[in-house]
Length: 362
Image (tube, rainbow, N blue to C red; front, top):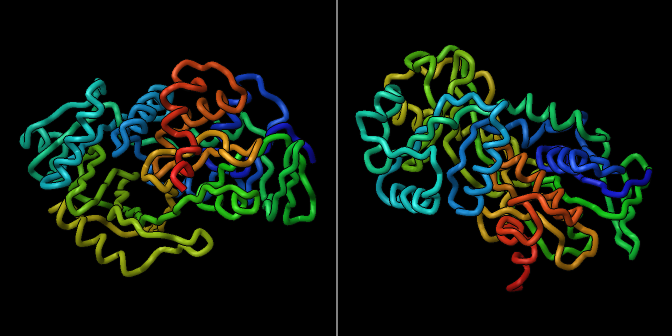
């Protein structure tokens, strides 16, 4: 097999990059996905929440750009963020850095109770985002996959670089030659990066989630509720709820199964933050993977500083679905050295997410 650009990883990072490249007229772009279908792991096993406010100002601005593109896939049930103490101070810092976010509204305790009567919103800072809410991951991933040449059940086991490009060894014994190689495999990116001589390393972590059926005491139009104080979030999921204890711990992507003991912690937090709510019967309990850069929640999008032709679209820190279309636009603009408004090479986002910063102090 041969391609001009090969993208390793058929999750939202790889699919959005392929989508944006094709939209811009690029050809000979192939996506290699180890699973039987694209987007089966981290991209699908997440909370499907559109949240644009993050700890990183550049990521928050990037998320707002993406949210404007994602409107057809969003159910704007609203998002209520509430925290107290040190977490409230952090929420205030984030909101100050996003002062231009027109959808952000500070609300009183009584207003928070009107918006989410099932939620014991902590006193302190309460922020309301009326146009945020639930994201249709399935429809978004399907639309992105339709515009890409995706080869599934294709596992890249080794790679080597030369002056003319890359030679990929596949588990089925085939080989693929490409001029440029995009690493978009999230938590599974590190081994391939090391094999190619990159100094960049990402840090995978896991977070537990649970979906229930038959919840009671939750309004039909309930918004997403999220607190950083004893962290927890919840949203409607059919006639039940999707809830998470917002845990975070290092994870081995090859063995990241859900920990049964976290169920009790999740139940404790749900009882505290959703008093009077009957969660219903748990029908799905799992842990999802999020992948971070070494400097926190800022992304890794752009050329590798050491390996010519190697390109990163990774380290999306759990914001991959919210930022998906912006990620693709930026990656495509950088790969093709093409002006594309705020996503152009040399722009603020390209500088903020430049992989070179991750090795500058090593």
